[in-house]
Image (cartoon, rainbow, N blue to C red; front, side):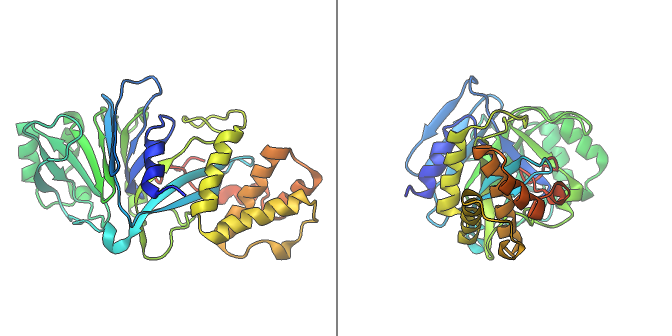
Length: 337
């Protein structure tokens, strides 16, 4: 089996894979187009990808663990998928600045940063630092004036000035960083294609690091996430014909790295359908995450083999359309399924 960093490097080299660093409601994402000009630097212990719109770097860490997940979608034939890259809580912890803080020159900058300082925006997250980087004297003075103020207590006129100045956003964790240079859209604007950030107060106010539907083991923390190509959805979320190659690639991650009970639940669902066993409520998994894996497996079997009387009966038993309202999300901020 390849090391965790080998797998990360493989997907970092794939333009169809998206990435994120963040928490529930505050997140940076990195995406690039297949034909976009790009600089890629991969070594045995770190990887970097840079475009004109943003950049990402990842670091090798022997404590890192992959947690691939699949969750049901509100769309009855679909599912969501991703891979959380986790560290033990103690190894993932950062400074958790409770207010705007000048961190000084950014010596690890991936994009041009001459004379610029890095400022933590004060979200007090234990496992990420959400920052901006700027050399603009006016913006630096404004940031100094609000030093120590938590982000959500900042005056609205300052937040609007920050958007107008459009500094590079820098999100850091113990496993890497994402930098975003694209313009910050208006509050009611469309999320730009490519690298971007989100700050969503209602989600952040829930004080959760990820959706409860994602099976993160106790005492582990998400430091990075990636989203390999989906077998039935494009990068923009529209449907495409079922792609068995990308499906099999993700199932390899599930079998090798997902919590064993989840992989086992999927194998059981496929066994019942392959052998045309009658739907039986007593064999449906009792735990939340295993039951979700079972439901996803039913949907996937129909993409592989087509619907059958057996699959229809099993889905009516535990995956009817009205049950899909508990859908999870793709990147941790997205409420669309």
